[in-house]
Image (cartoon, rainbow, N blue to C red; front, side, top):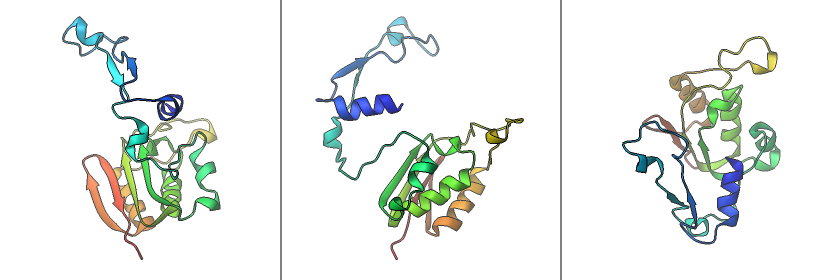
Length: 163
């Protein structure tokens, strides 16, 4: 995912510049052969026209290592996590880091399930994980962020009040 994102963000000159065939390797849920062979032009908009500024950050590596650094405390206006928070061994640690790096008035937007990649893995100490319901995630988040609550369908979105 990081390679594809980097390519689109850094190597695209126009909207619709690249053609991919995302369904070519799957026969599932196709009404006809032409569905499977349907091309898609990407990106739908040119990344430079999306308002991405110098404050944008996309980083390969361990989230905890990268964003625990004191230089990130209170720096970010928004944190967007997509199919991400359930990759943590300790989701509470992720929530604590997100709350620390957001500015007052900052926003956390999350999209994705709570499938917990390390759930039910036994035997190796480093594969243990904390698996919480969405209700518990919201409680931990509220305790850390102490802000108004706005929840969408299956996602977690927060707006922190400015002090």
